[in-house]
Figure 1 (cartoon, protein in one colour):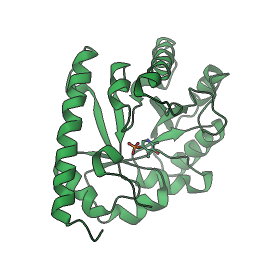
Figure 2 (cartoon, rainbow, N blue to C red):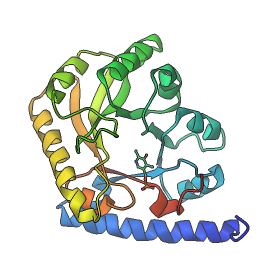
Figure 3 (cartoon, protein in one colour):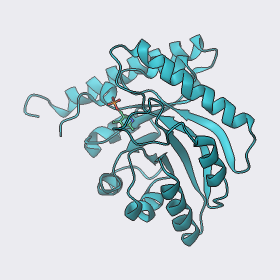
Length: 239
Ligand SMILES: *Cc1c(COP(=O)(O)O)cnc(C)c1O
């Protein structure tokens, strides 16, 4: 970091956020919606608390972390009123910590994990809001529910009373251009609408979480209601 003063990093975040907001507003209008119908999440993995706090000072009220441990390590340096979601693959032995530290798990990717979250939530006397992660490109390397059998899985999950399904999350396959990702976003959106139309007890299709730094604009055009943006806001991650 010897090159960059904190002020210059902050002003870069300011500029980035301004540009992102303009593009979100534009995409929202193009998709027939209002800017405030799209929720913005700052993805904060590897980002130090000082930078996260600066982003929060710009009005960002939702952050996403991939790892429970990393969220816990930053928690006391963050303002208490910021909403935190887990967006990375969650190991079942971290479920209790995850649902205590985060207000939503966006990355529920198996029936087994859903069951563990239900059980842990019951022990804590709470209902945990979750999104179901769908492997829309049917990629071996990715977590998420396969499309095959997804509806049966949903019906099974709907029986878990301490878990509240609020929508879907997806990460499309890596595409050469953001335009190529649109077909995956549109397929996810179709699933979202179809499941919503089934009117399943305890399954409420309200949040469609899709779109990252490279393709949040296209995701909004295809119906995303929540975008998860990391590097376009904070700059490239330094591991
Ligand atoms: C890292 C990550 C993001 C943000 O990625 P960027 O390309 O940096 O915007 C979004 N969603 C998930 C699940 C991630 O792991």
